[in-house]
Image 1 (cartoon, rainbow, N blue to C red):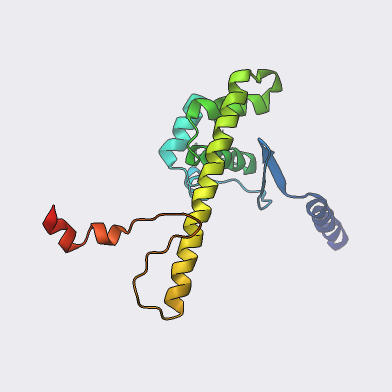
Image 2 (cartoon, rainbow, N blue to C red):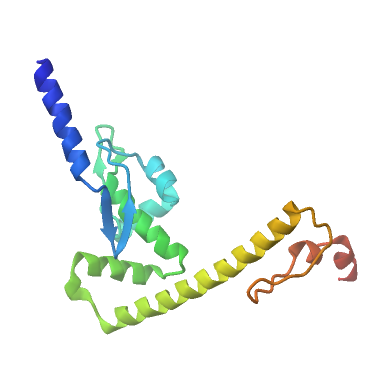
Length: 182
């Protein structure tokens, strides 16, 4: 009995070691922890960043598959559900319209659904992502500069722009003096 238990555990360890623990949607490779248990809707929401109502909405639209139901009738989700929902949330957070996300997923499920329209949308979103990345890089450089000056004990208020970024201070706009002028 003990030998059989060890063989089963070693077999599982070998399976896990051979699996690269990645799952892909639309060329996104995301690592996830291999797990054999299921998640309830609240845990799926917490892991993906989606609201419970959003998950139910996506199920009703058919973007997410209807989940299995447990003995008590509660929804049960697996790793594939988490990965698909995470992809949807990344797309939506990048400003993609839900119609486009639906078409991306339909194409992933059936590559014959690729169209010139979908290709144009992909190019638009790639351009938008590049612009966002550039803006974020500029903001990061600016904030790192401010942090460095503060850490060095610099107390003078200097307006420095890093890599051409111009950032307005919300503190100045919302100061009591500015409110009196308005």
